[in-house]
Image 1 (cartoon, rainbow, N blue to C red):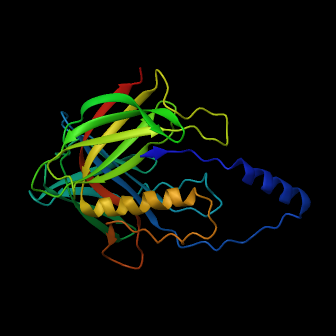
Image 2: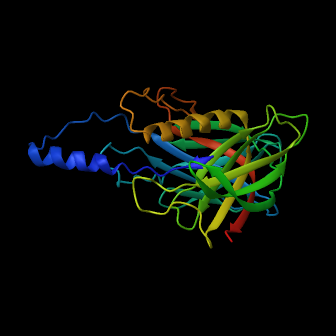
Image 3: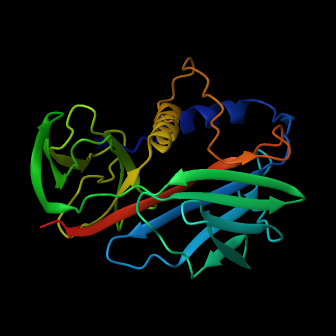
Length: 286
């Protein structure tokens, strides 16, 4: 997968010219209903107990108030192991963060999240999917785009005779956010699978975006369910389509996760409840 950071400096220049020659007009943007936003990514790192987990709750904010945050501090949050009928209650810490240190992850068990907020109940279910160990991390040069660029690659052994889906995140110490890649074993079931990642320079700027010596690459590889694979595939495609700058592209679909309001279906929330085993690794570019 190739990661290209587009900045569109030409757009800034066009905006400057337009705003310098015209009167500023305030546009009224209709605000949608305030909705609950759930960040519930329960990750169990291989070799750890996985007992410390966190769920974050907030509310949607108006379109132009990008820096405004509305944490939800008065909800009740619990995660239930539906296979064992065991409940883990999370307590509010600060700024909409609900935590527990008693969680017990079990591979292939079904889990349910339950959130009670303003007398309405939100629930979502997910299965804890396992993940193979990361093997043989290395670097190489990939030929393409008129030049050779450094790439990081690793392998993992896919389990045979079962349907598996994977989500892999890559980032360096220079990146604010991870770049994600999705894999399914539809045509490679039971094989040794290779994942690669490279960064490329942006031709529109002088900034170096390629991997270079002493870059520290962090890899988070997780096993995920089919429904989370579909959700993330739509989310990632919408993100990169939005960066394309195409004014005629299709309007993004309204993306809904697996957490439903069982009290009032019309008052839906945003977000996804995911439970995954993860394999992590760090590699320093030589």
